[in-house]
Length: 466
Length: 46
Image 1: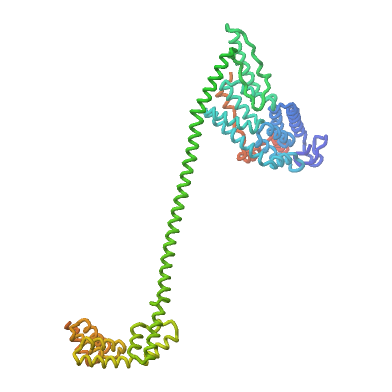
Image 2: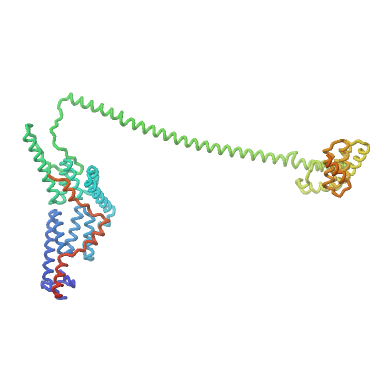
């Protein structure tokens, strides 16, 4: 025992040898607390847990620093399913004495098995929920929850008590007794359980008495307390019903049972089975439809790609033909070769016209050598050929052969676009031929390309008049 | 005979983890030792 003032060890003397405090009353109080602890311990060893809780609470009321009493109280709470209350006591105990305290071990053990602890915490919550249901008149829900709680934590005395009470209310005394017997296995002197059992006994006694005093023949009543109760036992109360012993009735009963079973299968199980099959079938149809739609979309996409590729192929083919065919580069080269041949044959007019009529632009020729050849032939033939044609045109013009002269002048102007006279006489030839459109075309060349020419006034007048 | 309504009133909710902290802090009530110490201290002051 330690001094309440300085904490030093006390002796048999009634005062502290270190601080001199009078410890007479203190010793008496501590001894009383210890006595209650001993009493609580003795009750706990006999599994009188309710009695032990009372004694230990008294012990702690006298001396809250009684660590042993507090630790034992926690242990008993734990045994009765009140794990949180047990933890609270152990935490307080640890707070009062931090070293060499078994409460540390208890707390560590609880914390080390977190899964089990969580499960127990859930049972406590469910019990509280069940209590709310029961107080709110929702007895069926309360019973369902409590059954779950007891399955998970069979030592939870509060839950067993509440379930027993609800069973008593439902006059299900067998189940109530089972719960109460479970309680008494944990806590032998649980006053609530004992009282409920006594009340059940009284009720059953009255019931038995009623039956025994009636005119019915007496029957044996088994002692329900003596029945062993397993974890999944369902107690069936004794009944006066007796199975008929006639064999024919038994056969008929079996046949009726078979018929009822077949009817149940036909009307209850088969529709749900068919429904399940139909649902699966519909689901498959939906899946296939989705796949089909997806396939169609893909097919459309591929078709469009194919069309694009075909269009591209046609375009490229055309380009290749333009380039490599007789209408493409080959055409230009052929024209150039023809022109060269004519030039070699000293037919300058044909050479020049072959260039002008077949090769619109020298840059279109595929090679530098071809371009160089073109320029050589053009320089050597164009103006000469234009002059020759102009001369021929003039001759025809003065012979009043305007058809020929218009052709010569047009060809001469085509070969040499600086030749304003060829344009003028071309226009005059067409004018004579009364081809106003062609005449206007050549007059317009004069107005546009030779604005300072002496023919401009006449050209402008003709254009404005026609 | 057991009166269900009276009995059900006696049942109290079990302490849940969330309430444990309050229960521990509120446990600091004086015991008989505290009372006796206080009485002795009062007497010695006089």
